[in-house]
Image (cartoon, rainbow over all chains, first blue to last red; front, side, top):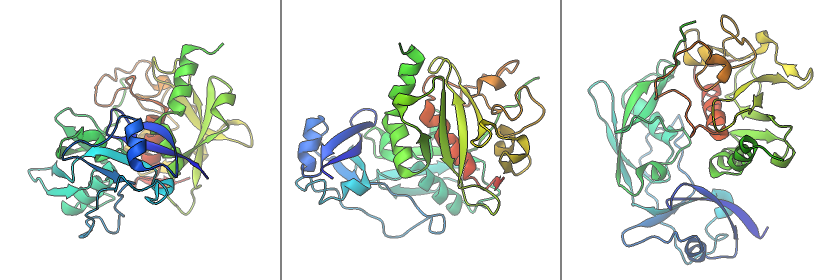
Length: 172
Length: 160
């Protein structure tokens, strides 16, 4: 396998790119005008918290070494490149007057934040099945598989509100 | 010649949002994008394990007017090549959003569409204008499949 399909986040909207596994990450990012600037980092793959371990204690990641090849970095498996990211993103979730706070890696999924928030707020998974995260400000309800890096647009903090999903009933 | 809707759909099938979910195993596309029997396409959406539920649900999408308005779809029976019989549609906790979206009685297109503002068969006569939940052009085929994957892995989903 010489060529690999990858997903590049952080340089505009997420895009699919093709690259050779023997390429260095620096060369791939340069080709797509996506090299990190001062104070920015590159993270790989994705962080998904398991439902039975929603608040892991040790998950700080090391930024990717741009000099290594895609193969050495495990990108044929990890697939996702998050460039121009802060080291961590501080997340606050507002719900019923409480606002728990935690830092996450930029490559963490919204689903992982939701699982963590329900755990921290002692919300039963069944009773809280219809609760979703809404971005503050803006009111957008992001997809569960969206990454914090895609929502933060370079910022190092995000605020969500935990809201009940609604399927509006029509006036038949 | 491809229509604008067909070109938009083919572009979205190649886009990062759809490809990432596909490679993650959240959904699969039946057939190659270049061989779609327009306006129809089939995806298999992965579901949470339930004692009486399939691993994946086959959905036939009717992508007519794709990109300019909501599409429609329904769970599909590959053996009979028809909509899945209504008693075989996904079950969900009564009163939940999942039960509402997959309900098979009491509306205009039971067991042939989804009772949700993103499905055009559910829009007729329904003033579903809340911008938070309404269809908008950013709702691509990836958003449909991601949303269905979420409902089918929800704690409210009970199987078949």
